[in-house]
Structure formats: structure tokens, C-alpha cells
Image (cartoon, rainbow, N blue to C red; front, side, top):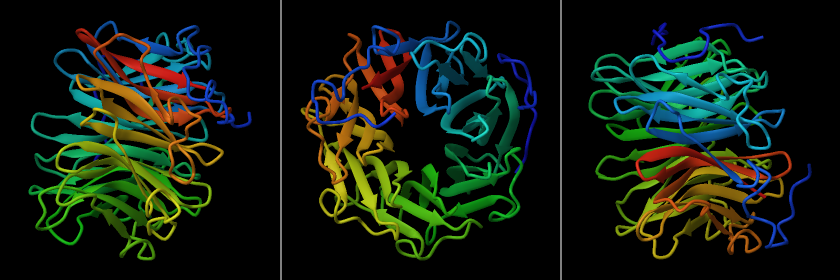
Amino acid sequence: MKRIALSLIVILPLLVSCSDDNLSNTNPSYWGMLDITFNNPEGFALFNNPLNDKDTGVETAIQSDGKIVVMGYSYDGSKNTVLLLRYNEEGTLDNLFGTDGYVIFDGGLDQKGLGLALSQDGTIIVVGYIRYQRHRDVLVLRYCIDGNLDRVYTYSSGGEYTDIGFGAAVQADGKVVVVGERSNGDNQDILMIRLTSDLEPDSSFGDSGIVTYNGTGNENDKGFSVAVQGDGKIVAAGSHIAAGQENEDLLVLRFHTDGSLDTDFGTDGTFTYRYVGDNSDYGNSVTLQADGKIVTAGSAYDGQSFKILILRLESNGSLDSGFGTGGVVTYQGSPSIFDYAFGVAIEKNGGIVVAGASNNGSSDDAIVLMYTPYGILDSGFGDNGVFTFDGLARSEDRANGLAIQAAGKIVVTGYSHGGENDDVLTFRLR
């Protein structure tokens, strides 16, 4: 475990201190369409870093003032850099943030932003990794509300191993929870780190701020997303490969506030799900309902194609029989052989919104699905519950993350590929 000062190459000013009702879904002509008031009249915005060829949006979040933060990474042909954008509510870049609305973190190495969280005081937390010659370390960045970089933290398990932060959440007391993976040489363990608001390891959590989970033995476990309950317990979603298996099962875990597994949840603190046989199933995103139920979205492979997979758990870690079929919903487009969910959020009316990708037979389309609280596609949203982004005649689009504004509008980010370049794609649905 260590904290380093990096040589920042392409970056904003260095290391300074930080000082509506829900829309109705009863009108198919209105609910689940591009909101043309966002970057009027398009309903979407594209961002291309003039110094880079490929830009990808991974997650988005809404500030208390309604401004939209988008996090991802840019690729300049030799390495990735962390990318952070901020849009005004109307979909224009906010020139009060960073340089003309965006900031780049470049430590002279390859690095990616993979997880995003906002603190109550307006600071922005980005997690991901920074790559050295033969290994990657967890990277955590804290930005002030104006886009100035305030803190940098990195974690290494030692040796030439891979450590990655995939997801982040901020507790009510300002502490930062990071989930990801840690290599122990032979396989991966789920890694959870809790930091103080100043990005120092929290000694009251696990072993000096670090918790790892490796199942019952030599397994491969990864954490992709994390959420904090109102009582402070921590829920993480990801995947694991159990002994004797070749492929992943979806995994959900719950921890006490001290980092110990909550044995009242699921089986000894864990819930696992296998769709069909020894195939790959992932929990890519997790969110919490107001009633304490847990919704996880990801993907399931049946041996021929990937389907979007959505599960809802009771607060005790059992499948919710009132959702879908025994707590499980799958989605497959036509003629798609690849449907994948990357983000999930809950509407005020209990509707479940999922962002992802669906292959149209030749390329991926960005899609947004809306389910009722019972796990049925909402026919009043988009095309029978499905919105497909077709704002551009491009070869490939993907939705990676989403957030819901106070008025119920849905903001989605990902990327759009046009010829040679990938641009950050951000759109809003009304």
C-alpha cells in the first residue's frame, strides 16, 4: 500500500486544496425519446479530445446543481489517459470546469478511469488503474468541484501483479470505498479499499483499510461495482470462478462497516448465480432501492450468445420472487448474439433503467432498457421498453453508464465509433 506523487504531464493546475417530479411513463410518444433540449437540437453530445484518437465515456453522475459529470479515458495512440468532462444541464461543456470543460490526468504512463463517485461536498472521485512496465496499481483521484486535482492515491499488492479499481462509492461521512481486483500471483481476489475523505487508508476498515475476498480457496474473484446502504453496510457485485469451474458466476457480497462479511446476507455473506451450466455470468453494476432491495445488472452466456442479465435480491441476499421469473430477468435483442449491460439505476417510481449494448448483426448499438418494478419491459418507454440510439450513421455505439436527473430524465454515456475515431457519446432521454 502506498501513496505516490506523480509527474503530471498533460493536466490542469496541480494539487490544490478544495474548499421535479418524476416523469410519467404512460405516454409512449414522450417517454423514452432523445431529449432535444440537450445540446439542442441533437439530444446528444460528442466529445473528441483534439490530442487523441479514441475517447470513451465510462460513467456519469449528476451534481447537486444539475451539472453532469462524465468520466472515462482517452487513447493517444501509445497510452490511455484519464478523462473527465462536465456538461451544463443543457448539454454544453461547462467552461468553468478544467480547460474548456474537461481535464486530463496523464502521469506519463498508461492509465484509465473506470469508476466515478461524487461526494456531498462536491468533490469528484475517480478510480481505475495506472500501469507500470509489468504491473498495474489501483489509482484513485480526487478533484475539486472546479476540476482541479486535489489528491492522488495508489495501491499495489506488491510484485509484478495486477491491481485495478473498477467501482467507487462515497459514504455519508465522506469516506471513499473502492472495489476491484488484486492479483496474488496465481489468481485474482476481490479487493476493497476504504479511504478517508483525504484519500488516506482507513485503519478502522479491514487490515489498515484493505479487505480481500478469495472465496473458499484458489478462485478468481473480481469486484466491478459497489454501493453503500443507509446503515453503512457495503454491497459489491462482480464475478468469481469457483474451484473446478472454468468460467465465472455472478457474485454479490455484503460487508459490515468494519469490512467483515455480513453472514446474515445470502450464504455466509455472499450470493452467487449461474445462468446455464459452466458459462460466463457477470454482475457489472449494482444499485440499491429505497426499500433495501438490491438490483444487479450484467450479462449471462448460454453457450451461444450473451444476454443482458438483471437480478433483484431481497435485503437478506435471496432472490426476490416478485421480480421477473424468480428474481431474474434476461434480455436478448434480435438478431443479436451479444447483449451486455454495463449500468443500472432506479427511477423514483421504482422503474429499473439499464444501459448497455446490443449487436444488430454487424455492429453494436447503444441501448437503454426500462423495466417496471416487477421486472417487465415498460411498453410505454421507447419501442416496447427499449431505446436504441440511432442519432448517428456510425458503425458502432455503446452505452456504458447512466444517471437519473431530479426531473426523471436519463443521462447516458458511452462511445460512438465513426470511421477511425471513438468519441465520448453522452445523450439524454425524456
